[in-house]
Length: 117
Length: 235
Image (cartoon, rainbow over all chains, first blue to last red; front, side, top):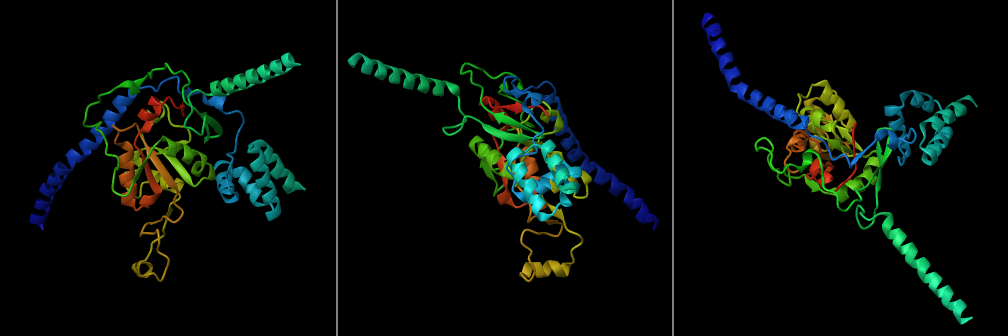
């Protein structure tokens, strides 16, 4: 038992020594990446101003109905909760409206309207 | 009467000339023979990807460097690992117009956040390669793989796996850990031909069992994107 304990410590030390270079290598790469990124910039002529690009809160157009539902669930979960309570027919109405407008505000209003009426 | 007809012809010719020159000057530097631009959904907005129209423009910024130390910034092979298809800018534009819109695809910026925040390709999501290389139980990896459409399988018995392998149960696109049947089409990219970040991400995904035919590699990355004067966006 005593001999086993004596053997374990050197084994652990050997294991650490073997693993250290790979750990150091991984850190060296990420450090090099970080250092290279610090002074870097993209060409400002290519950079688009996001606040200008967003003209309205676009839901994301072009989805099929299933994709539209997943997207609503992921990005606008509150709206999705109400959407789920719609009948199949009204869900289709909401989806068709989304295809035309792709605007979350008008979609929300429509969903609430369909729920209430 | 002859003068009137001549005037009419001249007006028509002038009109056609003006129309053609106006149309030609609308976009001098197109994306390709078919497209002036591509609209991409980026977060909650739509970005129009175009090229810089100034034909005298020279690129500025960090991507003008020709020589970074190798290692670590070594030139990468066209194919990061066997079975992975490399793609170019036209493929990216098509991807933006199809798979990104339908939600069936993801354009992944596989660089670390320090790079990503300097500017990215519109439509991209940032999942650093370090996440893909993380331990399989790491929450960040689980979260990232969910975005890719992977579902973690609850403990699957050896018996069920055997039935799947023998074809009695549908085991296609499944391994012991993940169900890849809903996995998305991916294009991964990083800084360009001298960058190893997206190749590492791709290798890690393949090691996890991700279907190779659903992974593509944009080797040109931000370097080529910049050289072509294409739109970037800061997150």
